[in-house]
Length: 364
Image (cartoon, rainbow, N blue to C red; front, side, top):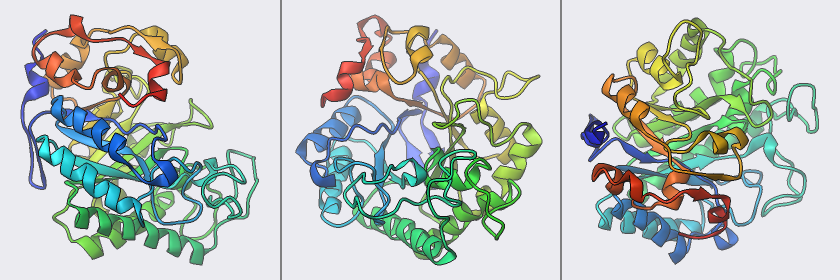
């Protein structure tokens, strides 16, 4: 099928992109002492040169002592900001656009991990997963500090010249710890119903908007599944999904990045729409879909490792042609092929290289 639909411009009042291809955020731990160096700069520049419309960086941690679980995960504060400025300039110089993914790992962080090993990890109710209490619940004062950390990072993103920012609210990390009933058993304003469990993210969004205004585009990444439970769902029905989305949309999310493990899987019974398709329908806002783009079944069965041969993107093209979602995030295929977008546009799928887990340990 003709891939032309992937390369139509994306025109949003706050964000214009040359095409619909997004580089998915992928943590690789190549930042010495949390500072992105010239190798990281080159890594992102190559993807911009290769034709990606928008690069979303790997998770980069907000200024909070429990935000990171490893010293080589990039930070988004202090000396690391100078490194990110060079990354921004390199991507812009190659004709691309870029957004940082602002991240706090929350309850996923094990005791003693990260650059501040003696600092306690953060999770709303002290739960790593359902029934797994390992920490003390966050106090409201601590929550206020976390909101301030996200806000500071957002202000710095604007100052550095990024084109957008993404809040990482997926996969069982801090914001998602508040979303998920399995890790949020609070009985104050931050807990309770699905709608109330969005309050932490809503307060972050409101705080950021108060500082940076309404014109800068904000992306929110969320997922139904969690690292702690691949089968978990925040919303069991479209009606519940609407209850979840409405407060976030009203608080200032411009684009929803809907993380699924396989983009072609329907989200709810009775419809072929995937999660991004449902979110677009329910909010009227643009969505990014993601999940095993151009990877074969063997890889996605293991998800976190193994190898993958190149797979057809015919269904992706068909779904985008039907306007199910607006943008598609490509992950591991872009690790193996920095010029994935250019090759797909030229209809050179046969020249794409397969993905191998060994590439996760290399800067390519």
